[in-house]
Amino acid sequence: MNLDEYQDSAIATAIYPGRWQVGGLLYATLGLTGEAGEVADKVKKIVRDHEGILDDEQAEAIAKELGDVLWYAAMVADELGYRLSDVAERNVEKLASRAEREVLSGAGDDR
Image (cartoon, rainbow, N blue to C red; front, top):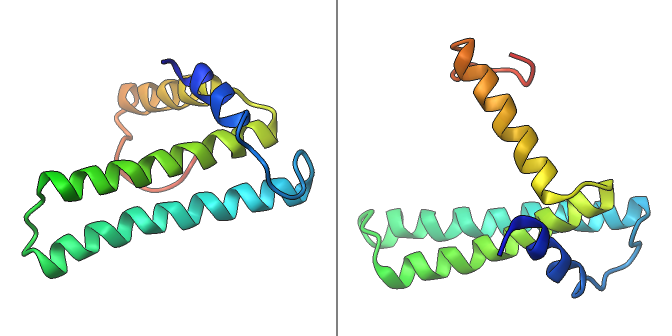
């Protein structure tokens, strides 16, 4: 499955308030940050409770949360009128430009 096929499938399940209005963008963005927080929390618990040792069960749980992150990322992109493939392509181009200019590390969006 490619990113746009995924996005189309995700959109088919998108039922939330304010679709295609600022409220929909807000909802999708808050969902994205919430799910990203769940990924971080699972990783934190590996450090805290499992001495930093990742097992297959924990990896699977994190992967499931990453699926939720991807769903919300697809919704944010849709709310903005973008396809996930376009977002991914722009990101790869940005990173390639930074690598070419040797500014991969550092701070700032426009380096």
